[in-house]
Length: 208
Length: 208
DNA sequence: ACGATATAGGACTATTTAGTCCACTTTACT
DNA sequence: AGTAAAGTGGACTAAATAGTCCTATATCGT
Image (cartoon, rainbow over all chains, first blue to last red; front, side):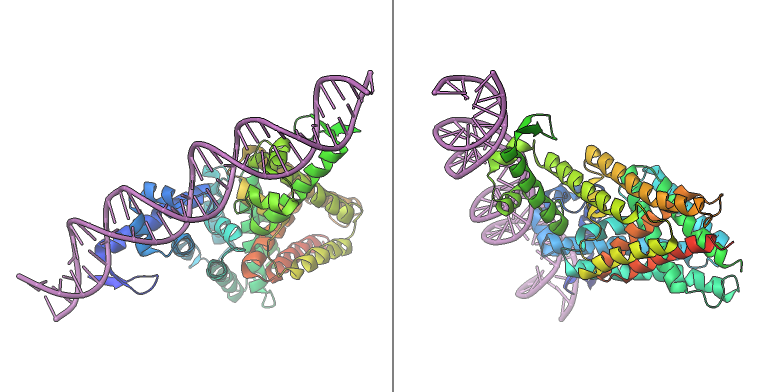
């Protein structure tokens, strides 16, 4: 059985796909914990138990690997958020979504920040392709938030003139900024506070 | 004439201080544009026109240089924000503060993000001392914002039960998250939108 | 079954990078 | 003026790192 290689459409056997996935999985973990710049290809090889030629067989180089990691992280985050937000249509549901993110982040005392946000701020100024991919992912994530707000609007909870997309932007920014402040303070509190402020704002709009 | 060396109290001549400052200035620029990880000591030497022994005379190594850069950036940002926010006591003044940040960021189309925020997300998980310094700087910056809100409260614009510190946290998070989204999108809009949302929230609290 | 292609292992190279060392010059202070 | 400390220049080393190359094995399509 063969499948298309995400990189260049080259044929890929089941075995090859598995090796490729192992490389990406190891790189994803390392880059999340150590950062992209501090993760060497040798680190990835050691963690995945794969040889160098295999890495270069599947990826043109470090940049290509980083892009594969972004795709991988993005896919997981978007899927997670789609499940978490896809059917939310109440402010209460939005608060539950907040609780999950806050509690997960609290487990690491804020360390490492948002998987997507950390990648974005490290890579955006260096690799245009990676930046664009991250930009699309943020847009998609934000679209899920906007979807929730739109449902609130459709249910009459938010007034028709509420600018759903701008609220979603503000919520995403508060989330990402909160992640970053929590990472710097090694304390999840600022992240929780920032999201709460936006949710309070959204709630206040519904009480007119 | 001699002054205390910021690093270890060693005596420092005017000439030495000048060399040290040149190193820090070059490193600051490079690390802002290229990122900390992608900036090599050789880059710093080339940009500052200084020899390697001088760099190691003034700093114990790259980590120490990064910390000096953080102090330098922090000092400039805090001074800038102190001037911008120190005497603001109206929402109108807060909007003008917003305009300056947005316009400055628009000049680079969002690139590089916040000088402090970019350092924070790259360094926080790698160097505890640097993280703590950045955490103190964010707290100081946020304190300036809280000062503005407190003045609004004292003037009766914000109600006495408004949680000024939490609003300042939310504003800082939106600002930082906005910087990051703008950097990823290469478009200042999300940053402007995020701050505007928080300012709208603050304004809505004043209309009770 | 068999040729073609994908996959695997790992030694090897060239370059970059942090960090060291030492000879020499300038400055501060009495 | 003299001397000790600070400052300077740059060659040098060791380690790390990205990337190449060649050989061998496994798998696929026919």
